[in-house]
Amino acid sequence: MPRATGTFTIDSWEPHPYDEAEGATLTRVHLTKTFAGDLVGTSTTDIITAVAAVETSAAYAGFERFSGTVHGRRGTFVLHHTASRDTGRSSLVWDILPDSGTGELAGIRGGGQIVNDDGDHSFHLDYERG
Image (spheres, rainbow, N blue to C red):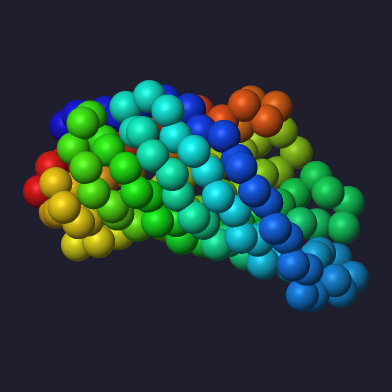
């Protein structure tokens, strides 16, 4: 199974809090990214975040549409994100939505992880070609 690795930058971050009740704040966030490495391209992402009032715990879930190339093959696909953080431990995973690939990425499947190292973002994506 091929592994794609690289980095991405967050180009825009547009938060819209919608529930700021005691205990945690729920926020819809729209963001855009630029990828470099084995994935070259851009994406738009929409996530729902939950941040505990004491800000030691947080989680999010969402969807991202990537457009560009994976190891030189051009197309698009959708990633499903799930993430959580609890006092120093974190998990940020993403899975390709099966059957969402287009162009030369039609049939792509797989998943991987995101690493956030104090604002520097890297990733790996293990995938099967369609």
